[in-house]
Length: 189
Image (tube, rainbow, N blue to C red; front, side):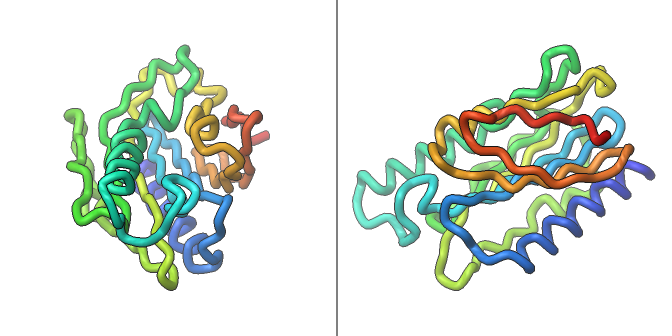
C-alpha cells in the first residue's frame, strides 16, 4: 500500500510540475520515488537539448540523432547509477519522443506493475515543442544502502539543469543538478 501511495505522489508531482512549468530549453525534469526496494523514475527533456532540434527529423542525419538518443535514454543505466551497495537493477525502461513515430518497446525485466497503465500516460504537447520522456523502474536489494544516485546523463547533456523531485518513505524534497555536479543525495534530512 505504501508503494502505491508513493507512486501516486510521484504521478501527482510530475503532473503538477508539467502543468505548472513551461517547456524550458536547458532544463529537464527528473522525478524519483522510492518505496521499499522499488525506485520509480521519470525523466523529461526538451528535444532541443538532446538532439539540437524540435521538429520532425528532416533528413537521415537527424533521424539517426533521434534514434541514437532513444537508444541512449532507453537504457536506465545510461541515465542513473545508484550506489553499488544498494544492489539495484533495472526492471523496466521505456522512452518516447514526439520526434519519433514509435515509442521504444518497453523493456520489462520480470517485475509486475500494479500501475502499468500509468506507465503509458504520455503528454508531449508543449505548444509545438517536442520532448524526450523516459520511465524506469529499479529494484534495490538493499534500499537502506541507497545513499546517493549518480546521473551520468548530465555528462551527455552538457549544460542542462535537471530539476529533481524526490519522494521517499521519509518525505520529499526538490533539488537541481547540473554537470559537474551529477550526484544526487538520497538523504532527506
